[in-house]
Image (cartoon, rainbow, N blue to C red):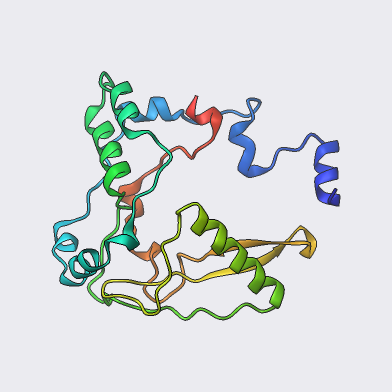
Length: 204
């Protein structure tokens, strides 16, 4: 057992990312309560739907944009017919079937297609770890099949491995804030507001 984990167990320590799964910690708001007043999730703006690069790539490569979810959407639809905030519910159901739009907009100075520089792995261990993670994601249908060059309307996201547990293992990191033209810079954080993060206690 790693030394940090052993120490955590002796102190009954709960990692920060797990604290909303621990009933001894207070919860700011439950998802069920928040959903009553939540605004509908946004749809892609019309200028994105009409972007010729986007429409061309979606039409020519639909297999790269499969929407995969473990959620049984029809069952969820049946269970939420009496929810007091149906506009929000319908937006969630639409997102599960068609994909979600993250409160984003394209700044005028952003190119439609851009390839961000991605440094190669620093070590063979990092390379092997990333290849293994790629295979895992492909097996779960969370990655699309590979292709050589970015298609019109696409941008890549740098992904790399960082050491954890004192270098005994690695963690895969996806950098949505890599400039220039980062994905995070396109998100309207004010419009997004505050939403409860996932966790069993928050969902309760």
